[in-house]
Every structure is written in C-alpha cells, then in structure tokens.
Length: 377
Image (tube, rainbow, N blue to C red):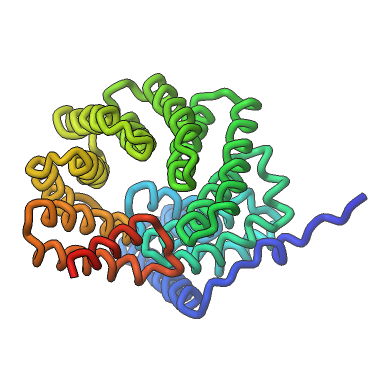
C-alpha cells in the first residue's frame, strides 16, 4: 500500500517575509480585538452564565476565523475586497494551516488561500510571483486526489495557463488549457448540478480566452459559444454573466476577422450592462466592454464613437495592470487616428510603462504598442 503523501511537504508554498509579517500583525490585531470584546462584555455587568456564554462565543468565532481563513478569504475576494482577502489568506497559510495540521484536515482550504494570493498577484502584474505560488499545487500529490472531488485543480491549471500564455510559453499554456477543460468536464459528468454547470461555463469562458491568445480562434469560437449558451440558460439572456460571455466571445470573433459579429456581441453586452443596469461590479465589467467595443470600431475606422467609448472606459471600474494598459493603448490608437500625435505618444508611453513593469510579460498587444510608438517617433 503506498504511503500517504506528506501534506505539509506537498503543499509548502514560498510566502516571503512580508507575508509572515502581515499574518502576525493581523493575528495580533484579532487577539487584541477579541480581548477588547471580552473586556467590554465584562463591564456590561452581565450575569455570570451570560458573560461566560458571550465570551465563549467571541473565542470560538475568533478560533474558527483563523482555522477556516481560506474560506473567509474567498468570501472577501468575491466581495471585491482584495486587499483584505490577501491579508486573511496570508494569515491562513501562516497560522490557520498549522492549526488544521494539528487536527489532520484541510479540505482544500490552504489551496483556496494560495489561489486568492496568486490571483491578486496576477492582477498586480506579479506574474512570476504568482507562478511560484501555484507551482506547488500543480505538482503536489494532493492535486490529483482532489481533482475528482472538486474544481480547484481546474482553476489552478487555468490560472497557470494564463501565466504561461502571458509570459510567452504558449505550448505549456495549451497543455494546461486542455487539462483544465478536461477536469471541469469530468467534474460536470459526475455531478450535473447547477453549481457544476456554473463552474463549467466559467471554465469554457477562461479556456476560450486562452485559446484566442494562443491562436486557435476556430476552437475558441466553439468553446465560447458553449459558454454563452450555458450562461443564458443559467442566468437569463440579460444577465451580467451573459454580458461577460459576450465580451469574451467578441475576442474570438475579432481575431477571426469578423468585426461585424464582434461589434454585435459587444453592443448586446453594452445594452445589458448599461441600459438594463446589470453591472454589479461598480462599472468594471462595463469598462471592459466599452474598451473592447472601441477597439472593434477602430478596426472599422469608426474613430469618433470609438474615442468616446474609450474615454468612458478609462474612467470606469477597478482595473488590473494589464487591463489598465489595454485601455491606455486603445486611447492612444484613437488619438493617433484622430491625428493628435503628441497625445497618442503620451498614452502609448503610459501603456508601455505599465506593461514593462509586469514580470516576464510577453503579449501581442505589447508588441503592437511598441510598433505604434516607433511609427510615431
């Protein structure tokens, strides 16, 4: 019988000194808050049994928060509280994970925390830092064991595929895209519940975008049309999730040269988010759509409308480093086509600066921006 893999060794992740410092500071803050809460309860002059019950509740709540920090971090991330989510994830990996090892359970909680930190690192342009975080998950024995019971492995492979694609390793990215799709479809085959349907549709969206980037637009169109169809059935034809799927679909349509279809998809997405007020992200999703539509209109020499859309996109949403650069590049293209060379150069330079600060970043848009900048002198 094979030996049980050493979980601590298998899931060991390099966090760095800053993560440990953040974790212990947050732990200290939580302990102080817990003490102050109990002190306040004591001064309320409650009956002994009631004080004991309330104080026990505070202690248990604090203990469970630390023990299950990965779940708490994922909830915070889902609520767009990424900074706080990162702190809680660091606390979970430094302290919570050690507690769970004492009780001999984890249930993928540590993996959730790693995924939160890796996703934030990608958004900040720290691609190589994110790769270091994810690699132990992909190579650990636990990855294979958990793949059949949850979707974490599919998410891990999808995130690593994005890192590989953005750092010029398309062949490695394609392998992980295939693996991510296979795992999501396998999980759906075992459990065709609504939750698994949502996860599979998300996997199709992510894989389709990666396939566009890798250059397989024909397959990307098929995958993204599946994603759109599933989301229409799951969320309704005028939902935010459908708008996001339409934006992704437009990428494949645009790269295939079908600008009319891409424009149609994006105008439908714009209508859902703008007219029907379905954007719950504070304008972030609408910003993506407006910028994508501006790019498609520029491809068709519809400069005036593209410029107005690009101006709006720059003002909207919580941008990650790559998307911020994309929007700056789009505005540069608008200004260049309007004949304002000086302003266009400024936007190209800003886009290039952001992209060049991303770790190991290699992207076709970066090369296009460089060429545009060189062309204008």
